Amino acid sequence: RYRCGQVDLLLDIASPFDTVVVRITSPGGSVSEYGLASAQLARLKAGGVRTVACVDLVAASGGYMLAAAAGHIVAAPFAFIGSIGVVGGSPNVHRLLEKSGVEYLERTAGKFKRSVNMLTPNTTEGIAKFEQELEEIHVAFKDHLVSQRPRLASCIDDVSTGEAWLATKAHALGLVDRVMSSDEFLRIKSTEAEARYRA
Image (tube, rainbow, N blue to C red; front, side, top):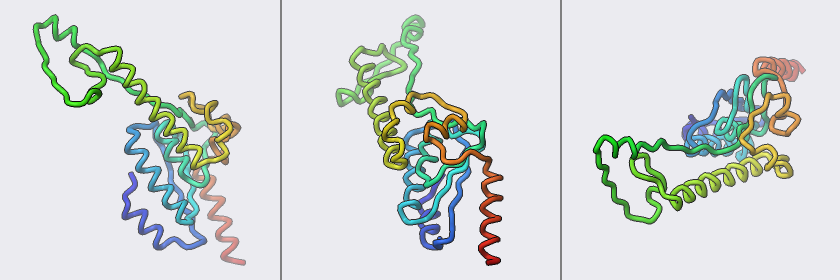
């Protein structure tokens, strides 16, 4: 997780010669948490700090949202990349409660305060509202990706189907900039820095 203070420190001390490398291994999670983390990484990029996301295993869904905020994405050949989509679900046990003689009472203020519920029957209107909210998040996710990686603008609908790809295919789709492991990338960058220092 990114803390504002850590990002502020990097913005204060980073020189034009520095690059912030973030190793990401994530199958995704809460859109709010990954949205905040990607916003913090984007602050570095916007502040003129070179940023690289390295993915050796997986950057899917929220993990890819975070990686996309970096200026450059490097992924190992068999890393899974993408899964640009949104999932939401809730079990519903109201029939089981009724069968057991349990009555659950809930009251809300606001038409859509609770669009779906696990303890009461769900309505067609509530399910439609829930699906609308998922679609709104998906659109915001796609917009975020295009704002961070403009090259995706022409193919965003093709790559935001919820599928994940091996990095080699993700590279061909424009989701990844370079295919190699993080260790190889860091070794190359270290060698380049040593050569510049000696020159």
